[in-house]
Length: 219
Length: 271
Image (tube, rainbow over all chains, first blue to last red; front, side, top):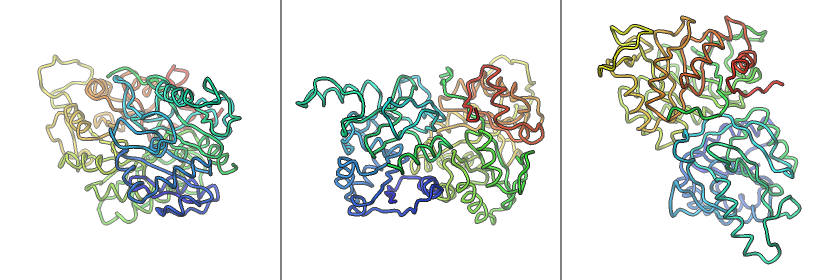
């Protein structure tokens, strides 16, 4: 099990959570290891720009993009999930990996930020990894439902094979959403095959998080 | 921003640790070792705790190595957020605690002495890792329960060095400044109420709630779920407690069930 050493990440909780589930964890910032690892975790806390810089300084973008596109077991956590998107309002002009549609934006004005605490996660019916339940969040930015769906429609519209947005998980490329509500609906997590992105911290979400991690490890 | 967020209210046990042993916050439950921080923290998680705070109350800074070992041990046993506080003097201390496994670092006296500590920590680790712990006492001449006219004088002042020193600094203004500098959360303790078991200082919570938009954790005075419910209605997003879980002999889940009865939204992990 490889964990990307993004310099802003709090690595200890991720490491102990995985070790508790019997994984041998090694930290890496080598592009080949990132591409070839049997399983990979992309953690992240802190600022989008700093995390993106840590990834690009080590030449990891292509490796990450490729393994995500091939649906090799990959778990992106918090900032790691935001890095999968096209970018973040927190750092205008700084590109994300672009494997997920949409730009991460701050919660609407008037909403208490950061979102600190436990919130209900409702996965799409065909989700196999993300369970129903409460997960622990600590974030000010997120992929809003409208933003993500609009960006996904735009992409789907450009494809040949399907008119509308497909529902369900038969298409291996399809991202299945898991929703949460905080000043409106937002993406708590996405999954597609063995790739999962979580806006929350599964390693800090008690039994719920352990269930998610176990299911991911079984993929 | 005084509207509640809709998130379940967080119930957070606090462990005071000295030289690697828990001195306050022990559980009434049967545990192999009542003084072991990791065992206790894990038990609290099992009881339904949303987070755990570990406060170092060691007398001297020589014990720094021991406190990191404590945080490592607690981290290995805990799958919910962990906040480390007590004697955090420099950004370097915060760095070591986060590396050892804390998710958040609470700073108190050192931030009052040098407020830039908050922006240092926030810049390095992000505001969500930085908690400003404020101990507040009623300013001299202020009577509890009497709403004085707003004459411009501070109603609550900041107290530092574990309650030993009044600073004359307006606690509400300090909270505003701390958040502006990068604190992502306020851990608000009433010095007057702490240990009294007569409930939290609601006026203090209300005033800080009206002044800052980040989450507020109420501390000091909790003896019952009713006290906690009052604190939430005054604007707290979370409640910190120690003796209710020891002396009142209630589990975290029992307290949460009582909160639910009082129509306070909580996360119930045990069905």
